[in-house]
Image (cartoon, rainbow, N blue to C red; front, top):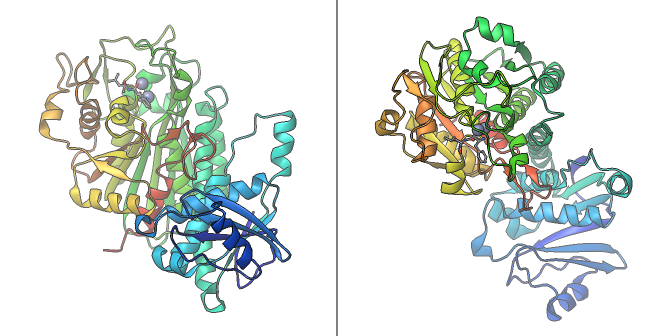
Length: 492
Ligand code: BES
Ligand code: ZN
Ligand code: ZN
């Protein structure tokens, strides 16, 4: 799909945004039609409303933005996505978004305005349809938008083009993460993902090291391997390294990569267990962010660390009560094998310390408790460094991947002190403060390094389409947040 900034565009359909209670924009030839649609009550600018108008000069899709006072950074993104899907499904190939003065101003100028449009279109048009056959597959092949133009003034064209390229990098990286994260447990095994990721690394000039089970054992990663013990699929520990020649700062991104979480011997109930194929969304977000960092040629040293394994209840599986020595030397009582994310992350966070990073950010679909607390509207954040947390929060706001900080007091560290070993992998059997005892567990493995933990259990996937997430399943949450964070890294 080609996305360009044009001073004028020939298209199958033009898209015009309009606020509620606005004097509706009158595009050439459409004035009487717009008036009619408004007077007959078909269009009022309400959020989500769309009306397709036909005139002798072509087609115009009116898209409602809601009330101007309710404008948010993602208003245009959502509306642009909605328009793109609506026109794709009507069989259009080339569409052009018009630039309305009020929308541009509200968005903060042409660059953010066009970026919102491109981002909304790419994310909304995303499909995971590779397993469809027959009519559905034909339809999908036939209905594909080929070209998107955003209409701007000559003087704005250069800035607009650059901003479009940036949005493309970020949002295609998001699509890559969604592709990985939507794969089933059967196809998306640690081995298959390792192959796919080494291809990606080759393509982007990223160094990729895949540690085998044996190599992980030599590294002393018994905490990670305790999760893999019940599975026939061999685990893989992937380390990606992107380094710019002028890099000063090293940042480690760590992602939970459970390719399927059955709970292990502490088996999960069968209801919606299928969703646990998304338990690798943290790792997927790291791959997306690494791709974007390399594509942007960021002046940084970025390491992506993702432990990949299934969590299965096989004959060799870890049993509740088993004790392991993690790579850091700390001993861990595994009281619940379903609290496996923290076990794989313990060794991954410890591995990150080798690089003496200025920051570690980990992402994990870690706790059901976080879904209870924040639902699907915010990622839970905990930290040992308020300054880093402020940066992460700002990046999240900017791309509308919002995070909400939860406290990580020493009392939560107390809750996971072990009876037999140093620490235990759950706080209490009744799940009290589940998100925070999990975070405190991780905090045991980062030392003094500035660290932010993002619990994406509620935000990593959706099963009701929402906004520009039209395809249900993985959202790729974290990719745009991390990319924005890295893009702004030096800025105060
Ligand atoms: N992968 C799950 C967390 C999860 C739950 C993600 C719901 C997305 C949606 C994690 O491994 C898990 O099972 N956590 C347990 C921890 C408990 C046993 C302490 C949980 O949250 O119930
Ligand atoms: Zn689990
Ligand atoms: Zn899990």
